[in-house]
Image (tube, rainbow, N blue to C red):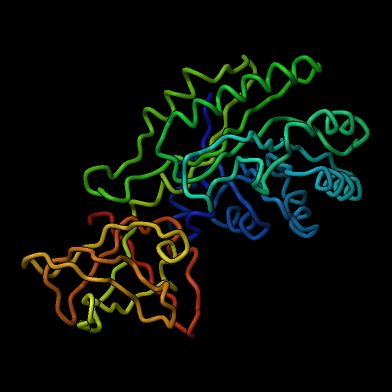
Length: 345
Protein backbone atom coordinates (compact mmCIF):
# COMPACT_ATOMS: atom_id res chain seq x y z
CA UNK A 1 0.00 0.00 0.00
CA UNK A 2 1.07 3.56 -0.77
CA UNK A 3 0.62 6.35 1.77
CA UNK A 4 1.26 10.05 1.17
CA UNK A 5 2.53 12.51 3.76
CA UNK A 6 2.08 16.17 2.84
CA UNK A 7 5.40 18.05 3.18
CA UNK A 8 4.56 21.03 5.37
CA UNK A 9 7.67 22.90 4.25
CA UNK A 10 5.90 23.69 0.96
CA UNK A 11 3.07 25.69 2.53
CA UNK A 12 1.91 25.91 6.15
CA UNK A 13 -1.17 28.07 5.70
CA UNK A 14 -3.61 26.83 8.34
CA UNK A 15 -6.70 26.73 6.12
CA UNK A 16 -4.80 24.79 3.48
CA UNK A 17 -3.40 22.35 6.05
CA UNK A 18 -6.85 21.71 7.50
CA UNK A 19 -8.16 20.89 4.03
CA UNK A 20 -5.26 18.55 3.26
CA UNK A 21 -5.57 16.80 6.62
CA UNK A 22 -9.26 16.12 5.94
CA UNK A 23 -8.28 14.27 2.75
CA UNK A 24 -6.44 11.70 4.86
CA UNK A 25 -2.84 12.73 4.23
CA UNK A 26 -0.13 12.22 6.78
CA UNK A 27 2.40 14.97 7.51
CA UNK A 28 6.08 15.25 6.67
CA UNK A 29 7.69 17.68 9.10
CA UNK A 30 11.20 19.09 9.41
CA UNK A 31 10.91 21.06 12.65
CA UNK A 32 9.25 20.75 16.02
CA UNK A 33 6.97 23.66 15.21
CA UNK A 34 5.88 21.94 12.00
CA UNK A 35 4.95 18.89 14.08
CA UNK A 36 2.86 21.07 16.40
CA UNK A 37 1.32 22.92 13.45
CA UNK A 38 0.35 19.65 11.79
CA UNK A 39 -1.37 18.40 14.94
CA UNK A 40 -3.09 21.75 15.46
CA UNK A 41 -4.49 21.59 11.90
CA UNK A 42 -5.91 18.09 12.23
CA UNK A 43 -3.18 15.68 11.14
CA UNK A 44 -3.05 12.50 13.21
CA UNK A 45 0.24 12.42 15.11
CA UNK A 46 0.55 8.71 14.40
CA UNK A 47 0.94 9.69 10.72
CA UNK A 48 3.67 12.31 11.21
CA UNK A 49 7.19 11.65 9.91
CA UNK A 50 9.88 13.95 11.31
CA UNK A 51 13.03 14.52 9.24
CA UNK A 52 15.80 17.12 9.33
CA UNK A 53 19.54 17.04 9.96
CA UNK A 54 19.51 19.34 12.98
CA UNK A 55 16.71 18.28 15.30
CA UNK A 56 17.23 19.95 18.68
CA UNK A 57 16.54 18.18 21.98
CA UNK A 58 13.40 20.28 22.36
CA UNK A 59 12.17 19.24 18.92
CA UNK A 60 12.90 15.58 19.56
CA UNK A 61 10.93 15.82 22.80
CA UNK A 62 7.98 17.26 20.86
CA UNK A 63 8.03 14.19 18.63
CA UNK A 64 8.35 11.83 21.59
CA UNK A 65 5.60 13.52 23.58
CA UNK A 66 3.23 13.21 20.63
CA UNK A 67 4.10 9.60 19.74
CA UNK A 68 4.74 10.39 16.09
CA UNK A 69 4.96 7.76 13.34
CA UNK A 70 8.70 8.00 12.80
CA UNK A 71 11.86 10.00 13.32
CA UNK A 72 13.83 9.93 10.07
CA UNK A 73 17.33 9.80 11.53
CA UNK A 74 20.11 11.46 9.55
CA UNK A 75 23.30 10.78 11.53
CA UNK A 76 24.87 8.58 14.19
CA UNK A 77 24.96 11.42 16.78
CA UNK A 78 21.23 11.87 16.26
CA UNK A 79 20.66 8.20 17.08
CA UNK A 80 22.29 8.73 20.46
CA UNK A 81 20.31 11.92 21.11
CA UNK A 82 16.92 10.37 20.37
CA UNK A 83 17.76 7.23 22.33
CA UNK A 84 18.84 9.18 25.42
CA UNK A 85 15.81 11.48 25.37
CA UNK A 86 13.43 8.56 24.82
CA UNK A 87 15.05 6.67 27.69
CA UNK A 88 14.47 9.63 30.02
CA UNK A 89 10.78 9.51 29.11
CA UNK A 90 10.61 5.72 29.39
CA UNK A 91 9.58 5.51 25.75
CA UNK A 92 10.75 3.66 22.66
CA UNK A 93 11.10 5.92 19.62
CA UNK A 94 10.23 4.52 16.21
CA UNK A 95 12.91 5.47 13.72
CA UNK A 96 13.71 5.16 10.03
CA UNK A 97 17.26 5.48 8.82
CA UNK A 98 17.62 8.20 6.22
CA UNK A 99 20.18 6.93 3.75
CA UNK A 100 22.09 9.19 1.38
CA UNK A 101 21.95 7.18 -1.87
CA UNK A 102 24.35 9.37 -3.91
CA UNK A 103 21.83 9.75 -6.74
CA UNK A 104 21.83 12.78 -9.04
CA UNK A 105 18.26 14.11 -9.09
CA UNK A 106 19.02 16.32 -12.13
CA UNK A 107 17.61 19.40 -10.44
CA UNK A 108 18.96 22.73 -9.15
CA UNK A 109 22.05 22.25 -6.98
CA UNK A 110 20.40 24.06 -4.06
CA UNK A 111 17.57 21.53 -3.90
CA UNK A 112 19.36 18.26 -4.54
CA UNK A 113 19.55 16.24 -1.32
CA UNK A 114 20.80 12.78 -2.28
CA UNK A 115 24.43 13.30 -3.29
CA UNK A 116 27.47 12.51 -1.16
CA UNK A 117 28.29 16.22 -1.04
CA UNK A 118 24.91 17.01 0.55
CA UNK A 119 24.38 17.27 4.29
CA UNK A 120 21.42 14.91 4.37
CA UNK A 121 21.25 11.31 5.50
CA UNK A 122 23.62 8.54 6.55
CA UNK A 123 26.22 7.51 3.98
CA UNK A 124 25.97 3.93 2.78
CA UNK A 125 29.46 3.18 4.10
CA UNK A 126 28.21 3.94 7.61
CA UNK A 127 25.24 1.56 7.52
CA UNK A 128 27.22 -1.40 9.00
CA UNK A 129 28.36 0.85 11.85
CA UNK A 130 24.77 1.89 12.54
CA UNK A 131 23.52 -1.69 12.51
CA UNK A 132 26.21 -2.72 14.98
CA UNK A 133 25.23 0.18 17.22
CA UNK A 134 21.44 -0.19 17.21
CA UNK A 135 21.15 -3.25 19.52
CA UNK A 136 22.74 -1.22 22.31
CA UNK A 137 20.25 1.63 21.89
CA UNK A 138 17.34 0.05 23.73
CA UNK A 139 15.03 3.05 23.41
CA UNK A 140 15.00 2.96 19.61
CA UNK A 141 12.97 0.71 17.32
CA UNK A 142 14.08 0.55 13.69
CA UNK A 143 10.93 0.36 11.55
CA UNK A 144 11.96 1.62 8.12
CA UNK A 145 14.24 3.27 5.61
CA UNK A 146 13.97 6.82 4.33
CA UNK A 147 15.50 8.26 1.17
CA UNK A 148 14.90 11.62 -0.48
CA UNK A 149 16.97 12.68 -3.48
CA UNK A 150 15.81 16.23 -4.16
CA UNK A 151 13.05 18.61 -5.15
CA UNK A 152 11.42 19.77 -8.41
CA UNK A 153 12.45 16.58 -10.21
CA UNK A 154 10.93 16.33 -13.68
CA UNK A 155 13.10 13.53 -15.04
CA UNK A 156 11.34 10.41 -13.75
CA UNK A 157 14.37 8.23 -14.50
CA UNK A 158 15.89 9.63 -11.30
CA UNK A 159 13.14 7.86 -9.36
CA UNK A 160 13.89 4.63 -11.24
CA UNK A 161 17.47 4.92 -9.97
CA UNK A 162 16.09 5.48 -6.48
CA UNK A 163 14.02 2.29 -6.72
CA UNK A 164 17.08 0.32 -7.80
CA UNK A 165 19.02 1.65 -4.82
CA UNK A 166 16.23 0.80 -2.37
CA UNK A 167 15.94 -2.71 -3.81
CA UNK A 168 19.65 -3.27 -3.18
CA UNK A 169 19.38 -1.87 0.34
CA UNK A 170 16.45 -4.16 1.12
CA UNK A 171 18.53 -7.20 0.17
CA UNK A 172 21.35 -5.99 2.40
CA UNK A 173 19.11 -5.41 5.42
CA UNK A 174 17.47 -8.81 4.95
CA UNK A 175 20.92 -10.39 4.88
CA UNK A 176 21.32 -8.95 8.38
CA UNK A 177 17.95 -10.42 9.44
CA UNK A 178 16.36 -6.97 9.74
CA UNK A 179 12.69 -6.68 8.83
CA UNK A 180 11.66 -3.22 7.65
CA UNK A 181 7.99 -2.36 8.10
CA UNK A 182 8.00 0.65 5.80
CA UNK A 183 9.97 2.28 3.02
CA UNK A 184 9.81 6.07 2.77
CA UNK A 185 10.87 7.16 -0.72
CA UNK A 186 10.64 10.88 0.03
CA UNK A 187 9.13 13.22 -2.53
CA UNK A 188 10.52 15.57 -5.12
CA UNK A 189 7.99 15.27 -7.96
CA UNK A 190 8.22 18.47 -9.99
CA UNK A 191 5.57 20.70 -11.53
CA UNK A 192 5.36 22.59 -14.83
CA UNK A 193 6.25 26.18 -13.96
CA UNK A 194 6.33 27.21 -17.62
CA UNK A 195 2.85 25.98 -18.55
CA UNK A 196 0.67 26.05 -15.42
CA UNK A 197 -2.59 26.12 -17.39
CA UNK A 198 -1.63 23.28 -19.73
CA UNK A 199 -0.32 21.09 -16.90
CA UNK A 200 -2.05 22.22 -13.70
CA UNK A 201 -1.64 18.79 -12.10
CA UNK A 202 1.70 17.07 -11.61
CA UNK A 203 2.31 13.74 -13.33
CA UNK A 204 1.12 11.68 -10.39
CA UNK A 205 -0.01 8.79 -12.58
CA UNK A 206 3.39 7.99 -14.07
CA UNK A 207 5.14 8.85 -10.79
CA UNK A 208 3.23 6.28 -8.75
CA UNK A 209 3.22 3.82 -11.65
CA UNK A 210 7.02 3.92 -11.74
CA UNK A 211 7.31 3.02 -8.06
CA UNK A 212 4.66 0.34 -8.45
CA UNK A 213 6.60 -1.19 -11.34
CA UNK A 214 10.18 -0.90 -10.08
CA UNK A 215 10.13 -0.94 -6.28
CA UNK A 216 10.27 -4.47 -4.89
CA UNK A 217 7.99 -4.15 -1.90
CA UNK A 218 7.75 -6.97 0.62
CA UNK A 219 4.32 -8.31 1.58
CA UNK A 220 4.34 -6.75 5.02
CA UNK A 221 5.60 -3.33 3.93
CA UNK A 222 3.95 0.02 3.30
CA UNK A 223 5.49 2.60 0.99
CA UNK A 224 5.41 6.21 2.15
CA UNK A 225 5.75 9.34 0.02
CA UNK A 226 6.45 12.93 1.07
CA UNK A 227 4.90 15.26 -1.49
CA UNK A 228 4.60 19.02 -1.05
CA UNK A 229 5.27 21.14 -4.12
CA UNK A 230 3.34 18.83 -6.43
CA UNK A 231 0.28 19.09 -4.17
CA UNK A 232 0.08 22.87 -3.72
CA UNK A 233 2.31 24.76 -6.20
CA UNK A 234 -0.30 25.25 -8.90
CA UNK A 235 -3.00 26.12 -6.37
CA UNK A 236 -1.64 29.61 -5.73
CA UNK A 237 -0.63 32.80 -7.55
CA UNK A 238 1.07 35.92 -6.23
CA UNK A 239 -1.10 38.88 -7.25
CA UNK A 240 0.69 42.20 -7.55
CA UNK A 241 0.05 45.68 -8.87
CA UNK A 242 2.34 47.67 -11.14
CA UNK A 243 3.72 50.63 -9.22
CA UNK A 244 5.88 52.16 -11.94
CA UNK A 245 7.09 51.72 -15.51
CA UNK A 246 10.71 52.80 -15.83
CA UNK A 247 12.57 53.23 -19.11
CA UNK A 248 16.17 52.08 -18.81
CA UNK A 249 19.11 52.44 -21.17
CA UNK A 250 19.16 48.75 -22.08
CA UNK A 251 15.72 47.57 -20.98
CA UNK A 252 12.38 48.74 -19.62
CA UNK A 253 11.38 47.86 -16.08
CA UNK A 254 7.99 46.87 -14.70
CA UNK A 255 8.25 47.66 -10.98
CA UNK A 256 5.76 45.73 -8.84
CA UNK A 257 4.52 46.24 -5.30
CA UNK A 258 5.46 42.59 -4.61
CA UNK A 259 9.05 41.53 -4.24
CA UNK A 260 11.45 38.83 -3.16
CA UNK A 261 10.03 39.15 0.35
CA UNK A 262 6.79 37.64 -1.01
CA UNK A 263 8.28 35.09 -3.43
CA UNK A 264 11.99 34.46 -3.00
CA UNK A 265 12.39 31.53 -5.41
CA UNK A 266 13.55 33.62 -8.42
CA UNK A 267 16.14 35.42 -6.28
CA UNK A 268 17.26 32.30 -4.42
CA UNK A 269 17.20 29.65 -7.16
CA UNK A 270 16.95 31.73 -10.34
CA UNK A 271 13.61 29.95 -10.61
CA UNK A 272 11.19 30.58 -13.46
CA UNK A 273 7.58 31.54 -12.78
CA UNK A 274 5.10 32.28 -15.54
CA UNK A 275 3.93 35.89 -15.27
CA UNK A 276 0.75 37.42 -16.71
CA UNK A 277 -0.72 40.90 -16.97
CA UNK A 278 -4.34 40.01 -16.33
CA UNK A 279 -5.62 43.54 -17.06
CA UNK A 280 -4.09 44.03 -20.52
CA UNK A 281 -4.77 42.41 -23.88
CA UNK A 282 -2.41 44.67 -25.85
CA UNK A 283 0.64 43.58 -27.83
CA UNK A 284 3.44 41.87 -25.96
CA UNK A 285 6.57 43.82 -25.03
CA UNK A 286 9.74 42.55 -23.30
CA UNK A 287 10.30 43.91 -19.80
CA UNK A 288 12.47 43.26 -16.79
CA UNK A 289 9.96 42.53 -14.03
CA UNK A 290 11.27 43.58 -10.64
CA UNK A 291 10.18 44.26 -7.07
CA UNK A 292 10.72 47.19 -4.70
CA UNK A 293 13.33 45.60 -2.42
CA UNK A 294 16.77 47.22 -2.17
CA UNK A 295 18.55 44.23 -3.68
CA UNK A 296 19.47 43.71 -7.33
CA UNK A 297 18.43 40.08 -6.92
CA UNK A 298 14.84 41.29 -6.40
CA UNK A 299 14.04 40.37 -9.99
CA UNK A 300 11.23 38.06 -11.06
CA UNK A 301 12.20 37.87 -14.74
CA UNK A 302 14.43 39.53 -17.33
CA UNK A 303 13.42 40.29 -20.92
CA UNK A 304 10.03 38.70 -20.25
CA UNK A 305 7.22 39.38 -22.73
CA UNK A 306 4.12 40.86 -21.09
CA UNK A 307 1.09 42.43 -22.66
CA UNK A 308 1.80 46.17 -22.85
CA UNK A 309 1.73 47.31 -19.26
CA UNK A 310 0.85 50.52 -17.46
CA UNK A 311 0.85 51.76 -13.88
CA UNK A 312 -1.90 50.11 -11.85
CA UNK A 313 -2.13 46.93 -13.94
CA UNK A 314 -2.63 43.66 -12.08
CA UNK A 315 0.13 41.08 -12.49
CA UNK A 316 -0.23 37.38 -11.63
CA UNK A 317 2.92 35.41 -10.84
CA UNK A 318 1.83 31.83 -11.23
CA UNK A 319 2.64 28.55 -9.45
CA UNK A 320 3.29 30.35 -6.16
CA UNK A 321 1.36 27.94 -3.95
CA UNK A 322 4.56 26.19 -2.84
CA UNK A 323 7.57 27.90 -1.28
CA UNK A 324 5.92 31.29 -1.61
CA UNK A 325 4.03 32.45 1.46
CA UNK A 326 5.95 30.01 3.66
CA UNK A 327 9.30 31.60 2.72
CA UNK A 328 8.08 35.20 2.97
CA UNK A 329 10.02 37.65 5.12
CA UNK A 330 9.70 41.11 6.68
CA UNK A 331 12.93 42.36 5.11
CA UNK A 332 12.83 46.16 4.57
CA UNK A 333 9.96 46.07 7.12
CA UNK A 334 7.63 44.92 4.37
CA UNK A 335 4.17 43.63 5.23
CA UNK A 336 3.42 39.95 4.73
CA UNK A 337 0.97 39.54 1.85
CA UNK A 338 -2.53 38.39 2.77
CA UNK A 339 -3.90 35.08 1.53
CA UNK A 340 -7.28 34.73 -0.12
CA UNK A 341 -9.03 31.47 -0.96
CA UNK A 342 -11.48 30.57 -3.70
CA UNK A 343 -12.92 27.29 -4.94
CA UNK A 344 -14.11 28.88 -8.19
CA UNK A 345 -11.09 30.67 -9.67
